[in-house]
Length: 123
Image 1 (cartoon, rainbow, N blue to C red):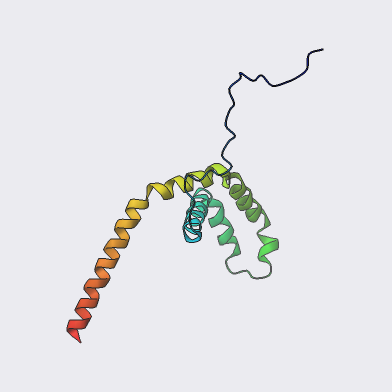
Image 2: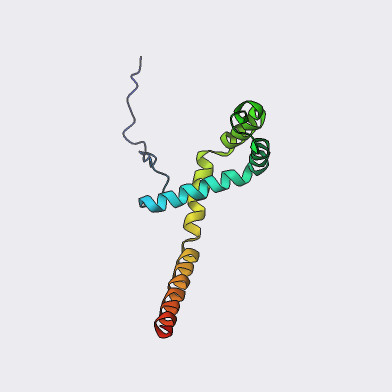
């Protein structure tokens, strides 16, 4: 009976990286990614969310009972699209739009400086 010992000449494969993120993000950056992720999921389930909101309009306590089918449809849609792949796509989109957000920040700062200069001259 041959023993099951590892072959010393076999190549050793690296263990997979436990994190999917290419760079560690700060807490505020993670919240931006999470916000983008939730926005993407809500966009994919917009019809179900709209149906549930329309059913709940004008109801208070009875909304949970009267709109149960719409709520279940909305929740099942959310669960269908709330996957790790969608989180990865949101993270990739966040990294892809870094330059765009930087330009927007610079424009906003330039406008703020311009407005500040105007108000100082005006007063």
